[in-house]
Each structure stands twice: as C-alpha cells, then as structure tokens.
Image 1 (cartoon, helix red, strand yellow):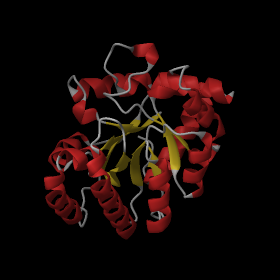
Image 2: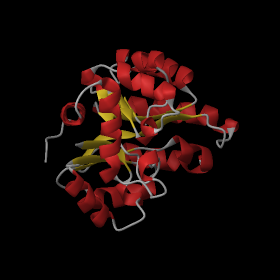
Image 3: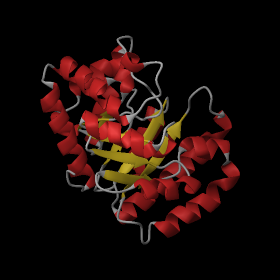
Image 4: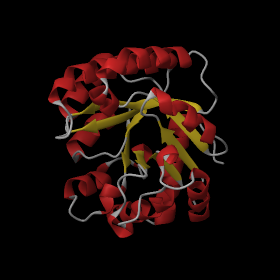
Length: 259
C-alpha cells in the first residue's frame, strides 16, 4: 500500500515507531507533505526507502503568517534548484476558505498558489493540492496557470463527483482520506465510486483525520487499511486489488519505485 499523503514528522509518537507499525500493516511507501520552510529539514531526515517527500507552503501557513510568505517563497525557490533526491513533488499548496481561515488571506493564498504552480511547472514536479471550500477558484487558477506535465493530486478530496471529474480532466489524481470511512460523508463516498481506476489514490493525512473506525486514536499511516477497505466496498472490488491499483498510481505519478 502507498499512503499518498501524511505528516509522519508531526505524528504524536516516535516517527520510526509509527513507520514500523505502518510497515507491519502493509504500508510500504508513503509521501510526507510539506507545510512550511522550518519543517522541510525534519521531513528530509525521515526520508529513505519507501519514504518520499514533498516540499511546499501550505495555505494555512499563508493565512497564519503572511509576513513570512516572501521569505519562505525565496527559500522554496532556492532549495528546489538542487533538491534532495527524496523530494518528488511540490506541496502542499492550494486554497483554504474554511470557516477558521481569515477571509482577508484569500488574495495572498491565490498569489501563493499561482507562484507555486509556476515553480512546479518549471521543474515539472507533481503538485500536492490542499483545496477546502474553494474548488471553483482553484479550478479557475489551475486552468489559467496550467498543471505541470507531471500532474499532481488533490489530497483528502472533499468535493463532489462533478468537481472530481474537473480535476481529473486537468491531469490530476484524486486522493481519498479517512473521511470516506464516515457513512455520513455521502458526497465524498459517491465521488470515490466515480474516479477512474488510473486516477484514484488513498491517504491518511495522519496524524489528522482519524477514520471513524479508529477514533479516538491519533491517525497514523497503518490506518490506511480502513480507507482502502471502505473504498473497495464502495467500488465493488477487493481490497487487495484496490491497494495494488492505488499503489501503482502513486508510483507512476511520483516517479518512484516500490520499496
């Protein structure tokens, strides 16, 4: 199995212990997504066999510390000139219009999103997208700026089937997280049945978004089993088949090889 989006560096326990449990559960590969400059080093320190890294500036970071944007952008530009081999994608980047986010940050979020897309295109890196309550604006920007030839993924997809198709048509993959395990998330569960086999991914977003089946524990990559089991049931296929399909898709997107 391939956990296409997690934050191993932010897990509540020793990351190596969390990684060992993931391996024992059958999660052989994972992508650690970046959120801000001062975390990229910790991510890279965890990189190794089957552990890949994406570096980017999260829209939450843009909203919480707008004064840091220019400095972090300069750092991202500089470091991607000669990135460590573990860096296989750019992100997280995107837009978040959630209720907890200051609406006054939306304009800067859009600027940061555009600039990170341009940088990803320059280096032809896949993009890792965080889109919350902003699908219309995100799709508009993606159409205007273009998606890297390498593609990308919309992580922890929370939209509907129509929006999922719009992203797929833009050469993006759709990644489903623990939210799909919740029977009340009918829109996401329906979308999970419509994404083409060659565009679907699975993730945990750990330590956040613990599946209903594992609460109140903090989330971790080992719980990817629950996401796969749920989506396999929804799609009417075996969990083994879905695990292979999503793993193959992640490797093809990120240019990695099974560990």
